[in-house]
Image (cartoon, rainbow, N blue to C red; front, side):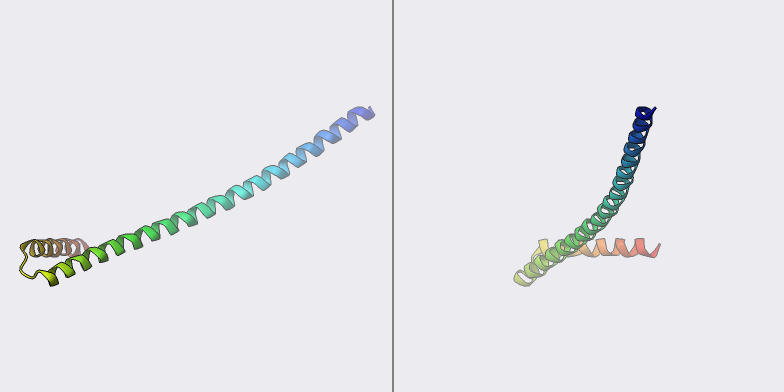
Length: 95
């Protein structure tokens, strides 16, 4: 009987240890998911900043080309396209 009791005690201890490990892994998994979400938000914000900088760079290039070659029809065409795009954005915002 003593051997059986010892086996049951050993199994019980091992099950408790496994439960403890499982709980620890669940907590770690939860922390990693939270960190992942935070990193996704950071990436999204950085992508927005990149797009804003690209737009700013594009606008600076246009301004530079306007300054260098006033009267250039390509520059005027691009400005007209930008104005139309801005008008469309304003129209969408007003809806």
